[in-house]
Image (cartoon, rainbow, N blue to C red):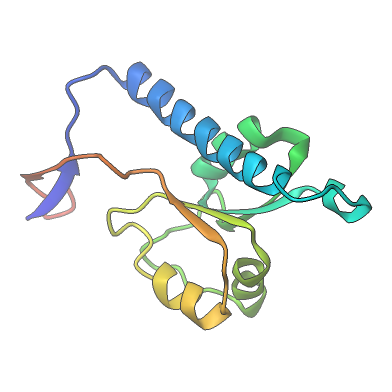
Length: 140
């Protein structure tokens, strides 16, 4: 048995809520960086890593030109069989913000984060989502 996401709201509301959480997280990051004196090098985009391609699309739509985005698992990639490259570990090390799905989706991320020595803020977008027991659709 594995968990599955349970929600009493239509999918459009879930995506809207997710967009709001993403916007708030980016605003918090922007405000935190704005609390220091502005220098010439502070105008560079925020280095953001998204763990999965769909999440990266949302982050890019919210962050726009204010972020430099790296996607760890690209479109068509499989997060369950993912094996990070040294370049991907380096992108985690250099990141200011990391957006992850959570709920065990990126089982490799904690080790990758620790190995990189990253100090990036991690944003878990599934935080607050309730999992319910259910049948595993992958079982045959």
